[in-house]
Length: 118
Image (cartoon, rainbow, N blue to C red; front, side):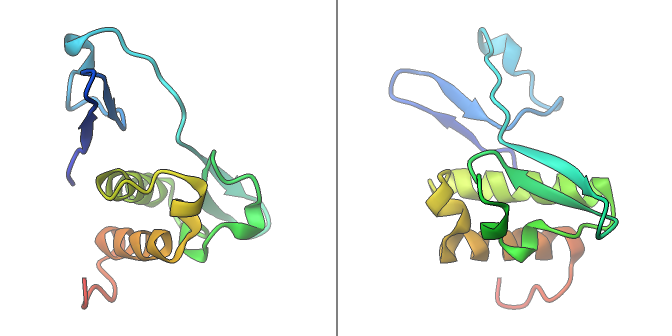
């Protein structure tokens, strides 16, 4: 899976954190949570909830009902990296048609199901 790193005109970096790339070696870090992965007691599954989305009902179905925590994490990383790549890191971007397409593409990458067309 790709690791997308944005570099602004001022030299600031933005990226999802992982241990594979030592971002600390590039300077002082500041962390902001992009989403929460929460266990849904009713469905007995994991949901990926971007912090930008305040209305849970607006959350596209692709963000919900992951059978394992690891799958939810893989999906989260794929969605946010693709959204960053396409400059769609906003509430509107994450729940728009483009955001849903990104989520479906990420779902297919994680599960390998129905990936034709991507």
